[in-house]
Image (cartoon, rainbow, N blue to C red; front, side):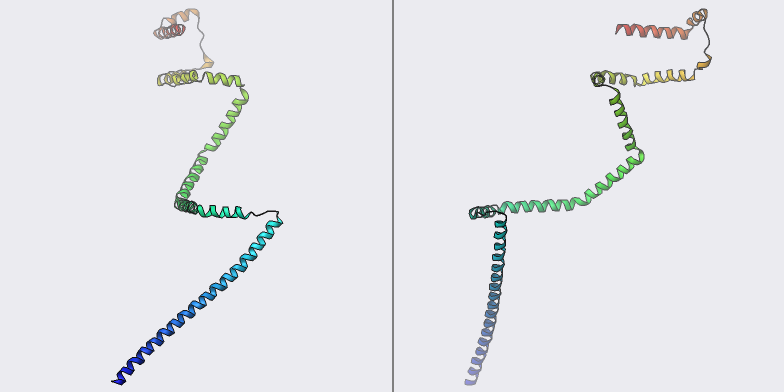
Length: 223
C-alpha cells in the first residue's frame, strides 16, 4: 500500500516538473522577445534622433523655422480627418478598380476607332475635307464680309429656292430641258423667216409653248 502511494507522488512530481519546464521555457521566450523589442526600440530611437537631427539641420540650412504649435495643430488635423483620408483612399481604390474593369472596353473602343479612321482614309474622307478646306479658304478670300453678311441675311430665301429647285417635278423639267439642249445640233440651226415663224406659231406645240410663256409671265408679274 505504501509503494502505490509512493508511485502516485512520484508521478505528480514528474508532472509538476514538466509544467515547470514548460513555464520556464515560455518565460525564456518572453524574455527573448522583450529583449528584441527593446533592441528594436533602441535602434528606432537612434535612427529617429539622427533623422530628426538631419531634418532640423536641413531646415536651418534653408532658413525655415519650425513652429511646434503648428506641427501639433497639423497632427491634430490629420488625426481628426483620418476618416476622410480613408474615404478618399476608398474612392481611389474604386476608381482604380473601375479603370481595370473598363480597360478592355476602352482598348476595344480604341481599336474600333482606329479601324474606322483607317476606313475613312481609304475612302478618301480626309482628302475630301482637305479640299473642302481649300474651297472655304477661296470663298473667304474672294468675298468681303459684306457679301457674307448678305448671304447670312438671305440664307432662308436661298434655301427655299434650292428646296423648290430640288422638287421632283422641277428636277424632271430641268433634266428634260438639259437633255433637249444637249441633243440639239447647235452647228446646224435652221434659219426662220417671218412667214415661217408665223406658220410655226399655228402649230399645237408652239401654241402650248406660247401659252406656257404667257401664263408664266402673268403669274410672275402678279407676284
